[in-house]
Length: 570
Image 1 (tube, rainbow, N blue to C red):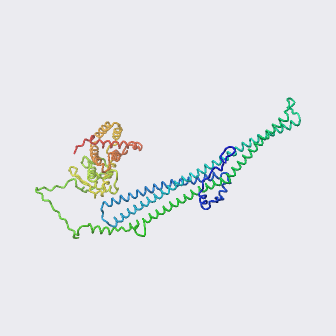
Image 2 (cartoon, one colour):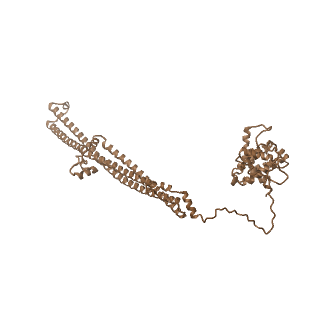
Image 3 (spheres, one colour):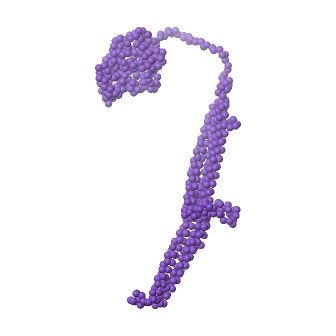
């Protein structure tokens, strides 16, 4: 049916059947679907259809989120299953290649790998089932989205028809009002002319009665035609509204309700499928962990019998039995064709002879050398050569400190020793002497240096050494230190030279003891240059500032040991 203005009639717009309508037609093809209470309620709302459209859109959005979740979950499960299966199979192949003896441990380990391979396959199956669910949900979303769009487009077309009809009605009403107003004007003119001369007639002749009647008839006909067209358009608009609100709107609401029900029911079904598959997978995994057939992971582990495995392995691979009596192996001396004299014991291995006590710690360097009659203090020779014999590979040598009781034992032993400084014999401390901790020997040596009344590098020349250390040019710094060292007293020079030679050996074994030049310099910088006392004003801030230069002095000496002291190459 076309409107009077040529617009599309509502009766020409068809509504797609809903699932409820389809089932109803199968049951009774002559009956129309009943309008339920919800549809009746939505029809009476001013925004019932937009509200239901928005509800359907929201359900589609939730379904899309579920689709996205299932796609990612399927990918995770499939990747997990593949990796677990691959790992189990590769471990199984590696185990088989070793051709190990079969026992409870190897059998249990093989079964454990098989259990994990089975779990991986179950996860792959679960991932495949989730993929099928995701595929079905994807089809569902496409179908529901299409139906919703069709209903929305249909609603827009109906509303457009109603708007066009009401617009045409408004125009017809406007034409009717204008025509009626013109007819009314003509009637008033006709009555005025019939009653006598008007004010206007005083200046120009009046129209005759025939002309007035003619104008009135034309206005009447025009008003009547406009009135008829207005009534027809009103009837048409009311008919469209009646069809829309009593027939088309309920159908669209029913269709949209069916569409929304369809997506909710379908999504609930797919979620139930997922829950069932999830439950089956978890039950299958649990069955692999523990089952009534005693083939689960837990039972497999309890079957490991270490004692039985050991007995069987020894019985199988232990070789032949021999007498339990222990045979004593005899020494068989090699008979030399040439007579060789027996070597004399090496002086290097002599132990320290014990005698009456004497003072070694806390006295001046020159006083100690005069007391011993030597060029280098014997404590330095004993400690360094003991360290070189037993501690070059000891990690953290000189950095770590021994126990205080052990250091006191070494100190007491050195102060009680007796030796001849003119002989070439070198006395060593035995591990028993230093309680098996070489750090006790290094601790005693550092303690001796710290207790010197005047440091090894005397305080009166410390400024000269610090000034040399502050030289930025390395060549100038080495030359300046070389000059300062040569100006030291003989006792200090000989002792410093001997110590530098020892520390050079320490740093040569840095790969073992982790004590390079920087580490040794940090330890011996403050030890050899000391602090302020005995007549010198103590300035803590100055001492802290000078400490970095003390470290740099020793570091430069150790780095350039062979340039400064020119030792004889062995």
